[in-house]
Each structure stands twice: as C-alpha cells, then as structure tokens.
Length: 512
Ligand code: HEM
Image (cartoon, rainbow, N blue to C red; front, top):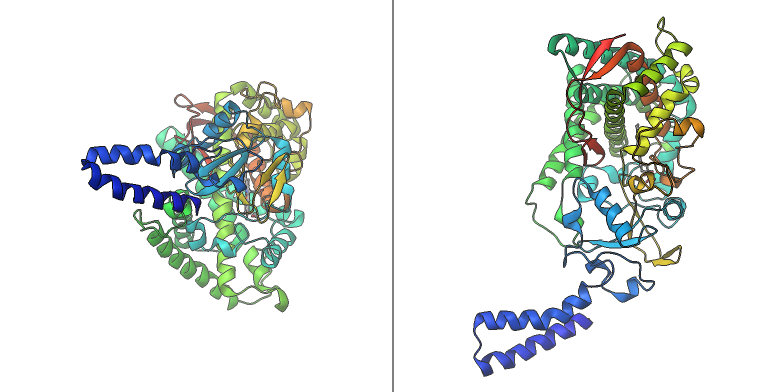
C-alpha cells in the first residue's frame, strides 16, 4: 500500500513536470530512474532481497544477499547452487541462517547442524513447497508432496509396515541378487564388445528393474519395463526444468512447454500403471506375491486407496527409487577407480570375510565395515541431495535460534555445506573412509552432521532399502572385478534433481 501511494505520487509529479519543461524521452527516462530509486531501495535493497521487502517479515534481520531486483538470486541457482549458496552464507557470516529470494519466494537456508535439526525435526516445517511440475505429475497425492495430514501419515504407515520394514527389505534380497547378476553380465558383455564399461546406463536400468520388481513383482513384460524407464527419465527432466510460475504468483505462459509435457506424461503414467493395477485385480488374490502393489490391493476396506491415488503412490516409488541409487553408485565407482589403494583394501576385506567361492549376501554386510565406510564417505562428499532434494515449508511462524521465520517460508538445509565444513569434519575434501572406521557414525538422520536421507518426520522412507541395495551391489562389484580408469576420472558435478557426475563414468572391469 505504501509503495502504491508512492507510485501514484510519482505519476502525479510526472504529469506536471513533463508538459512544463517539455522534456525529451531520454531525460524522462533518467528522471524516472532517479525518482524510482527510493522504491528500489525499499523493495529490493533489504537483507534477503525482494521477497523480504516487507519489514514485518524479517524483524530479527536474518542476514542474506539482496540479489537482483525481482529475481533475487534466481540467476545463481544452476548446476552448482549448493556451492554458491554455501560460499554466500560463509562470506556473509550467515551459516546458521541466511535469507534470500527466488523471485517472490521467500527462502531461508542453514549450513549448520543445529538449525538443520530444528528445521527438519520441528513441527513447523513438515510440509513441502510444491513445484507445478510435481503437482501435475501427481506427486501431491503421494508421500513426497502430500501435505502432512491424515492422508500423508496413512501413506507413510503403509510404506513403513510393508515395503520399507526390516522384514520387507530382507524379503527383497533375492530380487537384489538376481538384478545384480544381470547387471554384471551386461558389464562383462560391454567390456568384451567395447573394451570399456560406461556405467551410467547399466546402473540406471538395473536400479529401475530392482525398484519395479519391488513395486510390481516379477513377470512384467520387457516393453513395459522399458516404457516405465522412459517415463522416469522424462519425469526427472521435467521436475528439474525451470518454470517461472514456481517463483512468481502469476499465471505464466507455458513458454518452455513444461506444463504440456507434464500433462502428456501424466496421461501415459495413468494409462500404463492403471493397466498394471487392473490386470492384477483380475488375478487370483492368493498368488503368494509380496510386492507393493499386492500390499495396496489387499489393504482392509477402511485403509483402501482410490485407483487414482494408487497410481500416484506406485509411480512415486518407481520415480524416487531409481535415480538416487544409480547416481550414488556411479559416484562410489568413480571414487573406487580414482583411489586404487582404497579399492584394494575393500577387496581384501571381502576376500577375508567372504572369499570368492560364493557371492556376497545381505547377511555379510554388517561384517564388511570398510565397504560400508566407503558408502558413508561418498554420501558425505557427494550427497545425492546436497540441498536435501525437496525443501520444506513453514506452516506457521517459528523461531529458529535467535531468528524469527514467518509462515509460508521455504526452508532448505545445505547438507553439502555441512559435510564440507572444516569445523565439523577434519580435512573435509579428502576421501578417507577410515574416518568412519574410527567412529561408528549414524547416517540415518539422528546426527545432522551427516544426514544424506534427511531427518525428522519426512526423512526418506526408502533409506534402508536404498542402502541395502547400494551396499550389496558395491560389495559384489568389488568381489568380481578390479576397476580401473579408462580415461581421466572427472569428478565435476551437476545438480539437477540429484547431484550427478557431469560426465558419465567410463572404466575398465577386469575379472579378479
Ligand atoms: C541412496 C538413496 C537415497 C537417498 C540419498 C535419498 C534421499 C532422500 C532425501 C534427502 C529426502 C528428503 C528428506 C527430508 O526432507 O528430510 C528423501 C525423501 C524421500 N525419499 Fe529418498 N533417498 C534415497 C532412496 C530412496 C528410495 C529407494 C525410495 C523409494 C523406493 C525413496 C523414497 C523417498 C520418498 C517417498 C521421500 C519423501 C518422504 C516424505 O516427504 O515424507 N528414497 N529421500
């Protein structure tokens, strides 16, 4: 209102000045710029920038960059956003909490474990801001983006009691082993045909097959599996795509075609997943299956999900379960190829505790401390979600440390900054799995110095399943092959929905 009054006053002044002095257009432009300066000062030059322009929103003066007028720091959010945000926070002395603007979206970010715990585990931030693409792709009706009410709790309970329960994870070992056999067969073939293995495609396909197996069981036709793979890839691109409407409360034209592509993909998902559900409904119920679809179909009447919600829930599981595991394994293998001494040490451990006469099993993993330490160290140096993938949203006003954060603020945790902080981690840039042998560090969310799966009520429900897969597959890859670089290993990174290696890793797999 104050700004509106000033603008009216400014127009009134112009109405008198222009005819009186007979000004030319460049003069007028200059005068406008000078006169508008106070508005800019008011609207933009405040800690945190444009979205924090109303002083009642930031009474405790959370420090932060002013950024660009209207855009805030949107131009800085690219493939290295986690690094840029970390260096901004440390240069402004705002590691505990920093305010900034993404268009008109108000955001706070922490690079400190204490405040991270308050954000992730407190009740104020149990919702997520939802991007247009995520909403169009039905994720609002699945665990990841459903508001934290009765429906979301219901979905989490079903998932925790079945697919992600310790018994559920254990019962999927056969599937993990079978997919791993097929994966290694493909690697051998590629090695003998091309003389080099490009891991990304093989890891993606194997991870997809693994998650499809746990969601739909075995026996899905190959062409359906392939189509699901294309859908996950397209969904991943769409969610990572920039969309103006996510940052400004206006209806924007669909210049980039994101909305159109989302609608098209959603129709495909509904058709394909819908068909799989209908086919299963027509089958005998006592078929002995233990996959997630069977669980959903045999829920008691009071817990049943509608057909549309079931499609959304199954689709989300496949979508979330595929990339995270494949991306993490590619990072691990890049480190194995780069650090031959560490690779050899892990192989010695496997040799000593399992040998070569049988493949590593889930039950061996608790004894393979060094292999598990490697996984932890890669999660520390290259967390797949450096900003914890999807942010949180404050549902009411809240105090974070000494700062006041108003309702409706997006909150992020810069896990990458925390795991690279020299005041928390000794020599944080070194790849040193030994640090996790010296100290048995929990990584499931209880200690925020390393929480790659998040923490609190919205912590990743798939963490045990994801880790079981990564630990087993890594141990088996190291048991079977010696991994060597084919060219220089390039550790450049690129942040999309997850933090990926910028260039796919190519290496040599030599049978041991
Ligand atoms: C290495 C593997 C994985 C990593 C690093 C990872 C990481 C994460 C992170 C950081 C979050 C956000 C947590 C928060 O806000 O506190 C999350 C949420 C989630 N993850 Fe994972 N994840 C992995 C594997 C999986 C798998 C295998 C599945 C399913 C099959 C899965 C399903 C989900 C779901 C549904 C959510 C949303 C939870 C909610 O909002 O209530 N994740 N994950």
